[in-house]
Image 1 (cartoon, rainbow, N blue to C red):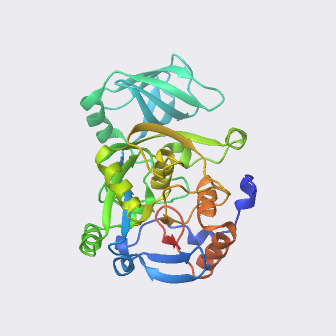
Image 2: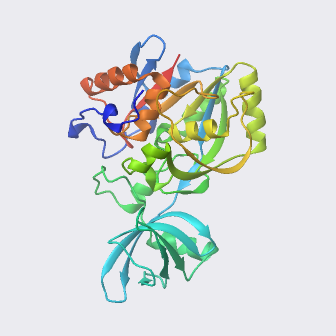
Image 3: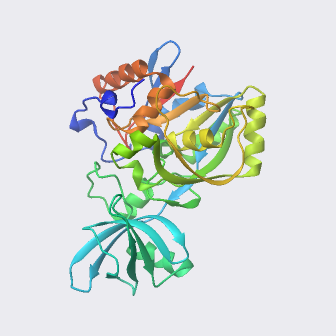
Length: 346
């Protein structure tokens, strides 16, 4: 199979890009796709409580989005914006900037936050920034002056307070994502409680979503067959529960491509078990790929020519996904981060 992104292309009418979430999170539409038969059904997201049961395990990514977008001024008075990608140590962060900043530049923000560019990578455009604040003080300032970095294809006039609420799962816990694990945005606390009452097992992993999730695939992704680096953690307790569930023949349902990447990165192809710990992954899943741990997937509709569309094509089959996406377009489903969802199973 091809690894050329152009082979994973489709035409989407601009009016189908969702600029805001559904009024009620779990009332969005849900396209169910049987990857063995290709059968498609049209449901609502809350219908999951009627189609899942005691043989099912939901794996959700509990990473929490933080206000990673900052606006500041240079000594010259020139303005810039930065997007924090990940923390390197107590006072230093990896980031990208617009316009590009150079080593040694001093940066000034509101609330007495200052920084200096300590490293710059011309190939990736990434910079390393050392701040004058760290630990709780830094995050308190970030909470005051930072903005949630919503995807560039979303056009919204909502307030920062509203965006912070909308672009966060109800179970978000571990701070560290520059983008939301969006398949989880459709869950409500009531729906999760209803699923538990149905006997569905719910487990949580953490993968901090990087800004690479917004970026187009680069030539080096194709040649190295790896993606941007993201950090994940699975606790020993969760690993024990998931490995036991898998051994018992339960269906492991990953909620979102980030949960898929976490589980498949931690999986052992020999004994079909996952291992615990903190680690990083650059896993690039594209057809053909043998899934070691994930049996079913709840996911949103992804951008054309993206690594995420390649992942779901590997999971469900390229023909099935092409057919399902065309059906979703015909039925005027809402696409991308705030859009509708798919349930892929067999």
